[in-house]
Length: 223
Image 1 (cartoon, one colour):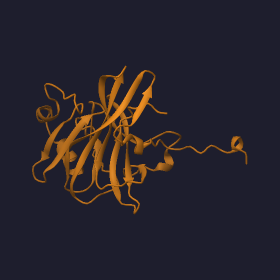
Image 2 (image 1 turned 180 degrees about the horizontal axis):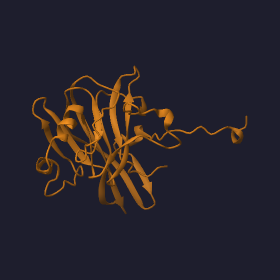
Image 3 (image 1 turned 90 degrees about the vertical axis):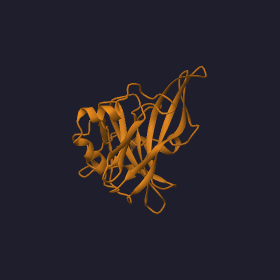
Image 4 (image 1 turned 60 degrees about the vertical axis):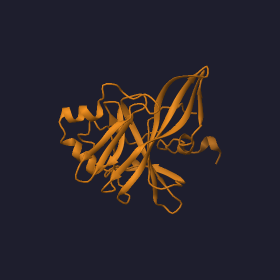
């Protein structure tokens, strides 16, 4: 069958994460260049191994963990920052992706799903994402996110709304321990261009084990 006669099969949104998660990757948008830098935000304590992606300031209704689980432990959190250069001069920084590293060597990527989410429901270039209404995103343990639900505004304000927001090297990097019993913490970063809905993906190794979780803040230009 000729290509023009073939039925077009809708494909869910899946960015080129291998390129995005490579330091020095360069994207062009007219006169503006986006250059990727990796920066370790800290270590995330996962007492249950069940990971949640959310905006920590608006966690109500966003506490369901992804179906892919990992062994309880402590794992590095890496912000992949897009440095925007205009005429070779840095004009601003945006977090392009947030990666929770479980083990090295993801070789394939798939959408991170919550219970009830089915990839068969996704149309062309569609995705499941978590909502951001306060400009922050995190990947944290279910125990930490559930603990935040009971926090009052003053506690949230003290931890996540500083008088001056960090800009470099990682815009908006804030957080700390939120569950004293388990030591579960929440480390958040600025969510790309701000509020919206952002997809998370699971990277699996050649043996099928979970290698990482990555939230794409959809900052870099799409080819």
